[in-house]
View 1: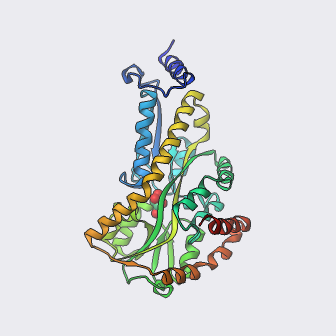
View 2: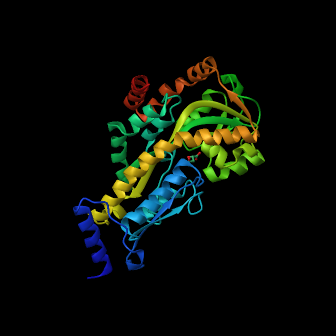
View 3: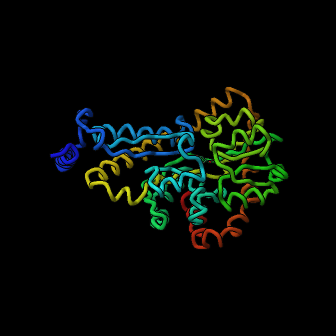
Length: 341
Ligand code: LMR
């Protein structure tokens, strides 16, 4: 009986026994027999997504005794925005965790997560992420042979720019923002009289440095770990939007795995999702403290009144984009945000 069958039998017996698989001696696993999962993403390792991908890899290796090896490629080192989805479809990689915005070119409904001020807190966002609405969106992913495995947090978005402190809607006039590829994000900045240009994440640092764009929006952990504060003088803490991730795999690849292996991967994904969501918020706070300590950016805290003004100025985006996203989806998010708050 080959090592593969022996390993599967062993894992199967362990699972049937109800106990989580113990580590088996990795040396027993024949290099040719092991399953390799390439996990590509675009952010630094020291971010919620980066640490979660690494934890997933460590736990899978431990729980399968090295039979399944997850190789994580952070920081766009293997594929960057605009290349990742083709790589997943072709089987060049087996896992991604793109921001929901980036799915919107193929699946416009995912732009519901880009709607400004859609979530008052992370719990509201999690209730949507774990509810029936997103389960429907996961079903649609199968059109591209994608399988949704989980949703992870990045956090709330803030504004950075090089021109002036941003407090009131009129302060945005004439600025040029980098955005992720999303009609909602384009409409959001156009509504404020600003320009918005989609750009791969790993090009943003240089674009801010050479002035191709003079502003961007992102979570604190991305702003900090990408050193955007080296080329941005002003940070406004607005929490005006949310970045969430869809953890994806290739459906054909997933179906090729044995039930024993998919059970371990699903259980591990569930554990890591809980772990990631528990830490994302704190990571943002810790990275904000670092940005404040380094003092490279003037940090603006918006008053309640200023927040309300910005939210009011961005409200038209909901109706403007309801055709693009789907009126009933937009209404559900509106209802949801009120209830979930
Ligand atoms: C961005 O492109 O700004 C973010 O999606 C990067 C990320 O994956 O958090």
